[in-house]
Amino acid sequence: MPPPMRRNLVGGDGSYRGPVSRVWKVVGGAGILGLLALVVIVFAYSACVLEVPAGSQAVLIRKTGLDLRPDMEIAPPLGKDGRYFKGVQPGVLTEGRYFYNPLFWDWEIKPQFEVPGGKIGIRIALEGDDLPAGQILAEPGQKGVRREVLRPGRYRYNWYAESIDLRDMVTVDAGFRGVVTLLAGKLPKDPNVTLVGPGERGVQKETLPPGTYLLNPFETRVSLVDCRSKRFNLGEGTDMDFLSADGFPVTLDGAIEFRVIPDRAAEVFVLYNEDANGDQIDEEIIAKIITPESLSICRIGGSKLTGGEFISGTQRELFQQNLDTALKANCKEQGVEILAVAITSITPPEAIAEPVRQREVAKQELAQYQQEKLQQLSEAQLRVQVLLADQKKELVEGEQSVVEKTTKAEQEQSVAKTLAEQKLSVAQTNLEATKDKAAAIGSEAQAAADVTRAQNKADVAGLSSRVKAFGGDGSALAKNLMVGKLAPAFRTILSSSEGPLMDLFSQFTRPKDASSPPTTTVTNTDHDAGSNESEVQP
Image 1 (spheres, rainbow, N blue to C red):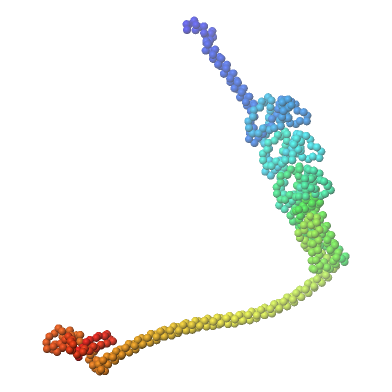
Image 2: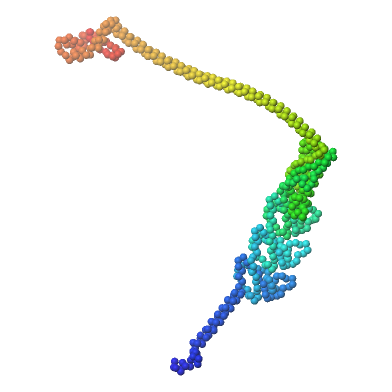
């Protein structure tokens, strides 16, 4: 730009007055406004946000709206015209994040109510209609104690509309029974009865067995009755004295063990309990049931016996048995069970105690002597029985030994007889077999002899025939046999040899002709060498 123009853009104070300066002014003003708006938004957010942490709850309180009526403690949700009422709102806010305008709303944050273990919570409504006359527990919409019971745990509630009261659970220990009294309910049909019906106001007949129960103490009251066994002495606190049949004073002491019948604990509690003793009824039972009954039975039974009979063991035992039986029966009718009755001491009149005692001692000594005599007789009889038993035992053992030996001898004889019979049977069998074998051998020898005889006979017959052929001349037959043996060899020799000597024998080898004398055939039979037939010319 020309210098004059520059001078016009610069102010007298030296600041720049051009278009860029105006832009920066606009931008700077918008930034400030944006920052202010952001601050306002952050402030509004932090003011409107409602953070309910875990385990807590919040109650809203309206600052503006319709005014509450005098009979209102909590604001209704909305009015008829859709407007809110001022004051505490009925609901509660659970854990989380909420946004409410602090100009119209306020709030309070508290931890949720926690019912610890072993406790119960009872809700008590602080707003609603008043209870009518005679009503104990509040129904929904009424002011007062609610019927429901809160178990151990964590609960949300509006502390302006209700409160929670912690109470202990009802625990009935072992050996106890819980007598239930309904404080709220319908009135009994018969107000003169001791125990009312189920659901009626008063003491219930059914009792609670041992255990833990979650009961509203404003609705149900439980009295613990001890049903375990107890023991006490008759002479404690009361003199157990009475007159005998002959007018002598008699004093006794004893121990009695008793307990309340569990099924009748409610009846006994109602009839004999005193408010001053709380739930304890042992003293009332002793004072109102057992002691009067014992004294009455002792007086009635004692008036039937003389003073001396109380020292006698037999009468004293009978008196105790009667007391035990009658006391158990009378107390059972009143709901008390007598477990044991024992008379520990009976004090008879001193005027007759010593003579009677001496008499009793004499009786006891006499009884003792008689018992000793009977014992000695019993021991003698026992000794005789033992000796007889030993003798009988020995006799039985001797007889048993004879029987055993006889039995053993008979068994051995039977075994020997059996073995002999077996040997005899085997010998007979062998004999028969030998006879059969001998017969077979004899038959075989006879057959061989018969064959030999037949053979010899045949040989003799043949020999005889041959002798007859030689006119009965045996020597001729012998020569013939010899020649028959030698003839084959000589024939061979003669047929192959020459000379005068051979000519002498050549006649024996000449051929047969018609003019030759007849040829005699000799059959030579030799049983050892066999048979050979030769032809010899005479």
